[in-house]
Length: 176
Image 1 (tube, rainbow, N blue to C red):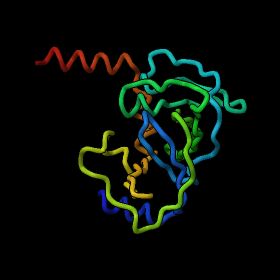
Image 2: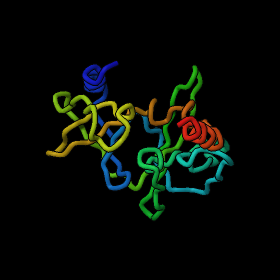
Image 3: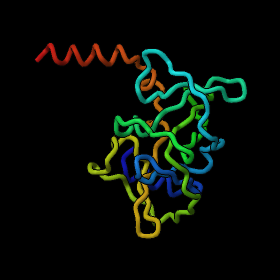
């Protein structure tokens, strides 16, 4: 699906979006993708996991991975304070539902975005990987990045072991 198709697809759906901040930048996801918003809780670090996987948490007896969006987007850890939250989402992965948490600096508000305010993601200059962007929307004269959760929370990418990434880097360096 190209950028224009993604923007049109976004505009055709629900028009309410939860906005939140990651490293001072404003992002949004469709409100229907959010199961709940919780305070940051005890997380257990997973050995050899990528840095973006902040850890796992106990969510009513179930293990749920928590992804640090700052680390995923910019390789910088979120500084946890009283405003930091975990956005709990549920994705369909290979026919099964997977509950995951996304660590964000703070939640802002729920906004309604009219269909004519959606625009395709730019090819460059958005500050995060282009595949993470579903579309852009203009709200009150400012642009908000609407995230594509299937890409941001891509299980195949996130389940790569830290050791695998290091050996791939070493292989690249040794080839040159």
